[in-house]
Image (cartoon, rainbow, N blue to C red):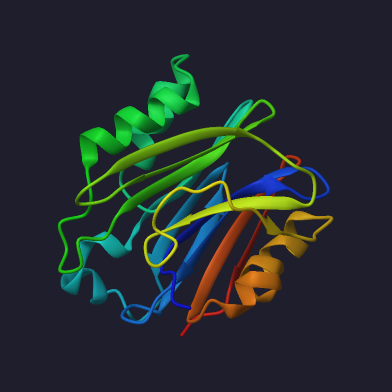
Amino acid sequence: MYCGRIVIVGCAAQPFVAYRISSRSFPNRDITVRDGVGSVVPRRGFEADLQKNPFISYRCLRVLGQSVLMTNGSHTDPIAVKVERGMPLKDAVVLGLLAYDYEGDDYNTPRIAGGLQGDLGHLGIVTKDTLEVARFALRPGFCRVVATNELNRLTAEEYEVRASTAQELVSYVLRGGVFGEMTHPVAAVAWMGGEVAVENVGG
């Protein structure tokens, strides 16, 4: 199952949000994190990939006090600014996805977003044809997912997740449970309980 970029929101040992990159075309990327900001960047030696597709590098994580946001593109910061100014995360995600729309690449890649605000999870997606955003209660031991491929619509389906730390969670969304069935893993980042972890597996 090829899901492309994936946002995962749920509750393991604590509420969490995670982001996984899966890629067939541009696997040579890493996620870096500094001061609560996560960025997707070309791996050293593959900077020329940006000339082939400018959408492959972006900020994917923003830690915003009581809120945490993950996305797959340049809509990260505009959504974050709205949250920092007091807008509810659900409304900020709606406005950000509406304003930025799907990516204008060869695949009409959806833009996705997800996060936590208080004890509620959020997921959103905008495709060429739809815009969907949901806010939902978290169930311990389970998560919800939205992706750019295959799982590219919002549903109430939940997946089991097992992790007691952010580092365990990163490993799980790369190779555990249902995520182990998702092909072409490249990198993942997770936030849980104030802790951020990253794993880059590359192509």
